[in-house]
Length: 388
Image 1 (cartoon, rainbow, N blue to C red):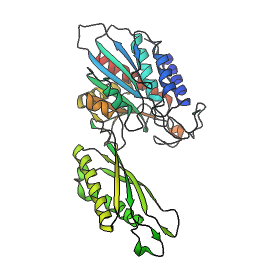
Image 2 (cartoon, one colour):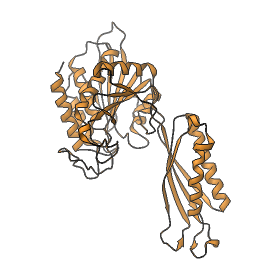
Image 3 (spheres, one colour):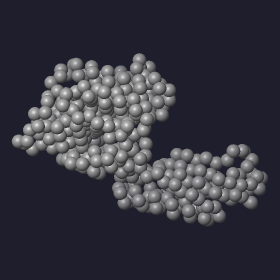
Image 4 (cartoon, rainbow, N blue to C red):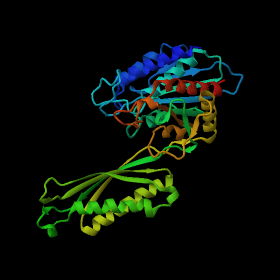
C-alpha cells in the first residue's frame, strides 16, 4: 500500500489544482477530465463518464468466499459563483468562481482512497464505486441525475463526507437520522395598481400587501405546525418600486422553506399559498407563486452511522463529536440516501492559526490540508470493512 506521507502530498496537490481551477455546476468539464485522467492511472479501476461533467470509477473484488458488499463513495466537484478573498498561493484563477464549500477537498480525499484501495489489488469481496458528482450546488442537483442513470443499482450502502470549519482538524462530527433539511424556494409576484404617491387611495399598493405577507408568513412556523417539527421560513428578497413618489403596480418576494419532516414540508407550502392568496384577495390584488422544489433531507442510517463513528474513532481516537441537531442547510446526497441506506458525516478542517473560522460559502473560507488524509483513511477503512 502507498505510504501515508506520499499519499498525503499527492492528495494535497490534487486539491490545490482543483482549487485553482473551479467550475460552476454543470460546467465541470475540465474538473471531470482532470479527475478522469488521474483515475485511469490507478490499477484495476473501471473508469467511465455517466455524464459529461461527472466521473465514476469501479473497483471489483475477485474473491467470492466472504460477505462482500457493493458500496458507493461519493464526492461532489462543483464550485460556487463567489470571488475568492483568501491569500492562498493557489487561489482561484477563474474570476468570480471559488471552491468555497470544500468541493475541491472532497474529490481529492476520494481520489486518495481510490488510489490506496486500487493499490491493494482485487483480492477482496464486493465492489466499490467511487462517484465524483457534478452540480451539487443547484436544483435539480447532479445526484438525482446520477441516480436516474442507475448509479445506485445493486448498491448496498452509500457514504460521503463534508468538510466543516465548525470542527478542528482531527475531528469528525456524526449524527444518525436526519442530517440536513429539505429545501423549497418560492417566488411571489404581487399584481396591484400603481398611482402617484400623493394619491394612495386610488392604488392597490403591492408594497403594503407584500409587507403584510412577509409578517404573516412567520405564523407558519409559530402557529401552523407543531413546534417539534417547525421548519425554517425565510423571506430573503423584496423588490418593489423605482421612484420615491410612485406607488408601483407590482412587487416581488422570494425566499426559502427548510424542513425536516416530510408532512410539514408539504403543509408549509400549502399554508404559504393560503396566506399569500388570502392577503392579496383582501386588498384586491392578484398573485403568482412559483416553487422550486429542492432535494429532500439527508437521512443517515443508524447502523451505518455507528460504523462510521467506529471507523472515525479508530483514525482520530476519541475525538468524534456528536452533531447536536440536524443542520438546516441542504445536500443533494439526500437523493442517494433515499435510494440506498447511507451515511454522510462532517470532517473538521479548521486550524486556530487561521484566526476566524469562516463558514462554508464565504469568500475567505479556508481548510487545513492536514485534514485530507483523515478523510482518505475514513473512505479507505469503510471500504476495507465492508469489502473484506
